Image (cartoon, rainbow, N blue to C red; front, top):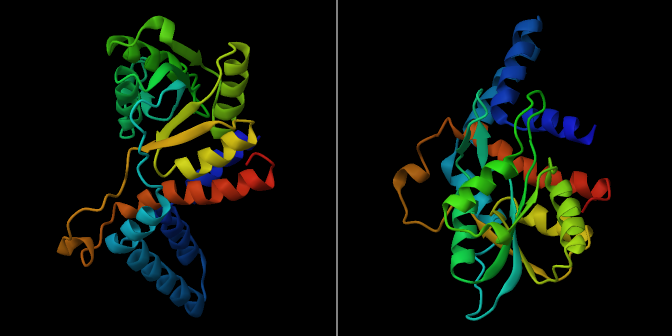
Length: 253
């Protein structure tokens, strides 16, 4: 039930969908005063949530800083959280726009920082019977030179809470002692840290990657030119913020 509710909530978090709902209300309502208020609300949503400067500022504030690993420091395992790939109707896997998680994990492995890689990822689809993401990532890790014996597969997790709980049980069963590294997108890291601590992880660090906003040089269009794509982009950040609250209320963080 929690999984289904989270999918519904994710849909409602996009300002683009707020506009659609407001438009439906506009055409259903008859009183001109109410329709006027809805037009004002639509205009406010458009102005606020297509503003690049506001989006960059909030995302940059939310993202944790880059993790600096001391020279010679090693970890028994890097836990790679799923959510970076997709499948077509033939169940062929493809990397998505968060695949920097995969790149950074292989970098950590080949540089000797992590000894093993635990892939945690089942299927996040609500209506389709897709393959577990972990199996696709397993094949890709092997293609990128990671040894079979250094890969641990957790194929059941559908969300961050299950990532943490199932990974903890698997690592304990293998007697693989900490410290560990949690590898996920920068905007997802604050929620992940809280959830993994709640699941019993004590000796670990976060390794954020897939940065959505970096401290780049100033461009005029970063402030004054509205970006309509941001109406959909905001939902990912709102998901993380509200997700922390929801997980805390349900005892998962």
